[in-house]
Length: 212
Image 1: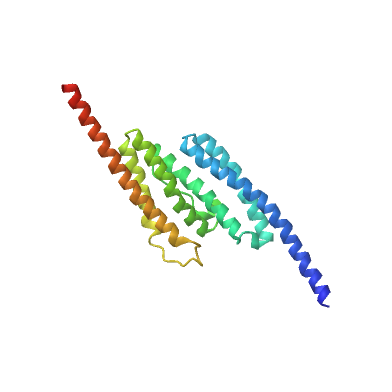
Image 2: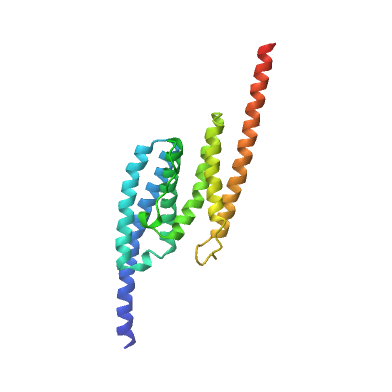
């Protein structure tokens, strides 16, 4: 009797194992797309980023279709980590494209992306780091107006996520992510201030040398 039940349980686990292996392959594919999208966005190659986004969306749909049959797939830590990176890539693309195009920043809802609210929040936190990189690029080109516009977005992100009071059981690692966004905000403010002052000083020195 025990063996009979054991065999049936093992059959279910075998199917889950095979499904999980299939999902792992899809997850690797999605991670690759997400990271490439971020790189294309930094390079301002938005057409390439959007083309990859279409491919990423198809992978997400595949995983979600599998998840309807085997729900454990969608509730695993593996899928949370992967969909977080996907959310980061999509949100970053939407934000930077809007900022550079001087249009209103709008980002898709989690259900539009086919991911959980937790993954969306964690992805949003990660975007702060990508935006700081853009601030550095803008400041190096002495485009401090752009740097400050980007800083306002980081400030808005922090304002949103710092209002959350969920435990890690709801959003894993949320406290450390909020601390991360705060650190990015503070360091970005300091970076802009320092580089702007250095630029002003160099301009003054240049004017003085021209007078001599």
